[in-house]
Image (cartoon, rainbow over all chains, first blue to last red; front, side, top):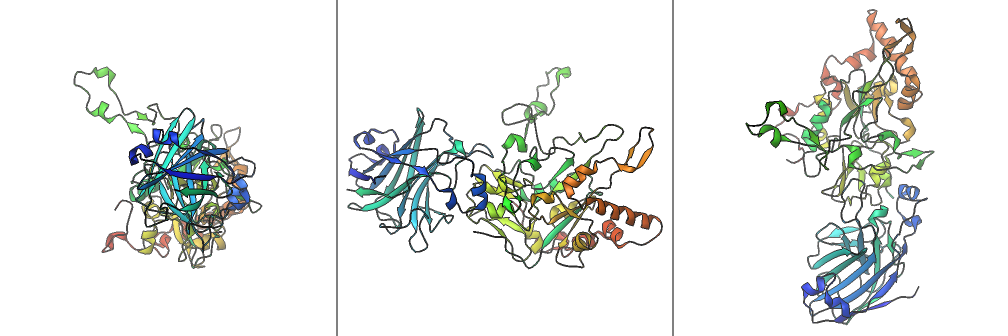
Length: 216
Length: 356
């Protein structure tokens, strides 16, 4: 699997145009098709989850197309993937919503992706779930340690049509959290949850290696 | 990974099924204390089911979870139609109908499910079914709460250590701030006593009224029980009702011990009436309730437990004394409350409850 480099090129588009999941600002940006694989079952941190999913497939989504863009203030990422049977919300006790996330090493340089970071080298992720208004900003210091935190500069918009999700994450270039200013070159990874397949928590498709995001 | 650590005390309950009336006062006591908040309309942390019956949710004990040979058993999580919904009733139509409406065509309060249709299932839906053929019909009531298991499948299933056992009394709680609503716990609970709050996307369950326990007050379901069917206390205190019924007299048994979770709610099995024989006479050797079903519910020790209760009853009926009967009757009902005898009405500050 080759590592892709995503270029976040400068655009004159304003925030609203960038946030529009099918906005024209995205037409000009090249996309990278990122291959996704199921997360390893033996890394699931509960014996119950391992037993319950032993004979059951997860990681239904095989690829996500990713684009990046920036304007003077904001960095945005658009994730698109095929979802013939979208789950747009948690609408029952046994229903799970579609979701996606992008993940960075908190130090901007490196960490262990397979364990979702470590106590010394945490990861930061932006997590969107269908049916919710705001994305979560999360940090993790190992599998099962995800903590949601408020990051007010983070926004997300989503759209489902023609069997495809389009999700845009947008965050201020300058923030108290992760540094994403111009000239930043940072590892990035991706994950998608297929709600129709009851995927949640560590049961998901993910990019098993970091790719690279270059913010021009 | 999280394991169920031990606690200083083992909070436990004994439900005497010979005294349960099936009145659901416990369920309503719990409802008014704890489940009036957003997304909790359909929650019954305490529920009384009729046996035989499919339970709450439907087929509750056939959905997997728990352990077999020490290994976790995959569980199913039913949807809201199977749990039973909080129905809407057509109050507007009934109370505010026009005076011109045809008197013969009066409306009444019809329950409606979320899809506007008549409900097809609900908590203890099959209450009036029972089992057996007349005149050998049979049933009994089975109250259910969180079992605070010694080997809690819910706690061990959670991938993010959201569920924990309290050090002081062993009560098992879900940290709502930490819960991300993945629901592996709800699948793993073999008694299906964990609910999902759709609005808040978190799991919620019976909390053994822990704010009351901390004030020395028994759980609401226990204190409100009109049949005085519920004992509370510490399993590790050899002088407690709980320990005497479970360990000394061995008449209080775990429900479905084959689930492998070692629950800390115990049941005094019901002594069922004798069966009628073909001549309409009592068959002295035959209970109406099939012993095979009783063994499935309470394990192989159930016959001995029933025999002990019956023989102690006979002893007292013959003018004798029985510690077991004294405990089960509990002439002073406060004796059933173990270390939780405090009258909440006499507290300066009442214990916290939901939505306060």
